[in-house]
Length: 258
Image (cartoon, rainbow, N blue to C red; front, side, top):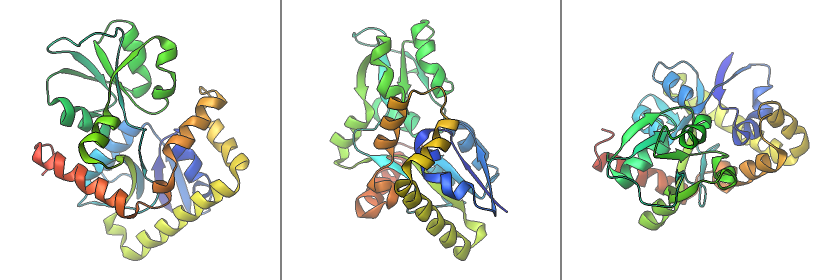
């Protein structure tokens, strides 16, 4: 059996639906921060990872050409309760130490913050309660933060695009290198076919998506899929690979990877 792991977020369940139900596959669903941490012990053969986590694990896990969450207009947002400047040393909620959101915050602001790591779905509640001065939100947070009265003080994706001219690499699918080239190639092709199946049978696929996203209304679920599943998901291509290399270069220069 091949052990695969991904998050219950709509973009992941959408692309993995067909593959997850194949006879030689065992699927496991976890929050992205948990997935990042599990990868350091090699827990799963195939796993969703934040690009930041993959950069730290790139000697152990091979990046697949397909399945990535990478694009434009989809980056993490730094939000506050009030539309006013942050204090000199703000207390900032972040969705996991190994997330690309954390890496982007570091690249943009350095370490000028008291960082509080928590599950992504708790950040807006912590901000509303005054437990933090600001929060970096990901996933469906970008579609609902304004409804809750928060203000965006920095779109980290827009910052990245202005700095580099490239799309923002957020998450990827990676396979343990010790499985060998033949197995890795087979998994990549099967995931590519799973993505094609999702687009060919959207309503059937979305039943699986809804089963793991019951807290999301259908409109937010659709926006999530449309935002994070795109042409780069079907293949990184030249521009996508350039974006990953740029993230690696900047992380190295900043001293956060070796």
